[in-house]
Image (cartoon, rainbow, N blue to C red; front, side, top):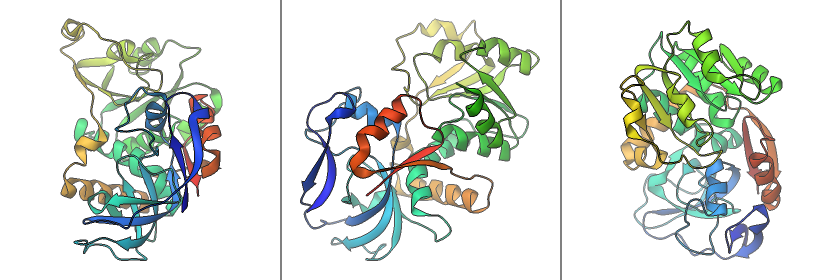
Length: 324
C-alpha cells in the first residue's frame, strides 16, 4: 500500500483526498518509480476542477516527478532498479510510488537534484519547446513572458536571456518584478498598475515583440496580440486565468499577419527521441548554470490541497514541489 492523492469528483482543492492504494507490478514496457519529489503545475488544477476532463474517475493527479526505479517490467532494458530518473507522463504523480511507461522516463544526472528535476520536467521541457521549437529564439529577438515570476516564467526569462534575447516580463507585484529581474528579465511590467501593451510599446520604441509566451490565457490573450510586430507569434500555452474565449481569426490580418499557436508539451514529447533530446538540452543548460530552477516552496504530499490553494491564489513564485 502507498499513499496517494485521489480525486473522486471535480471541484476545488478540497476534493483532493489522501488515500492508500495498491499498485500492481509493472507490466511490459513499464517501470515502478519511488517518487522523491513531485512537481506542482497549473495543469493539475485544470484536471482537478474539470476544465480538462480526466480519462476516468477516480484519478490521481500530477504529470511529473523524480525518484528512483524500484522495479522494471518485461521488455525494459534502458533502466534498472536503483537508477535515478525523472519523468513527465500521464496522470498519476501525486503518490509515494507510481507506475509509468519507460518511454516517458529519462535518466537523471547526479548534477540535478530530485526537487529540481521534479519541478522542471513539465515546466522546463515546456520552456525548451517554446524557445527552441515553437519560436526559435535568436540573438536580438525581443520576447514577452507573461507570469514571468512563475515556475515556467523564471525558466523562460533565464533561458531567453542566455539565447541573446531582450526579455520583457509581466508580473503582479514589485517583489515578483525583482525576482523576474534576478532571473534574466531585462524589463518588468506591473500588469495590475500599468497597461502592458503601452509599456511594451514604450520599452521597444514602438518595434514591439517577436514572440509572446502566454501561459495566462483569457485575461491576456487579445492584448498580447497588440504587443507583436508584423509576422509575430503568440504562443498560448496555458490558462491560469481561464480558457481563451473564441475570437475572430480575421483580427490577425490587420494586426500584422500574426501567427497564433496553442502548443502542448505532450505533442512534442510523443516521439521518444525528441523527448530525450529535449531533456538532454534542458539538463545541460541547467548543469551549465545558465538556468537555475528555484524551488521556492515545498508541501507534504498529504498537504496537496493547500499547495493548490497557494498556486491558484498567486501565492507562489518559481516552482513548488510536493514531497512524499
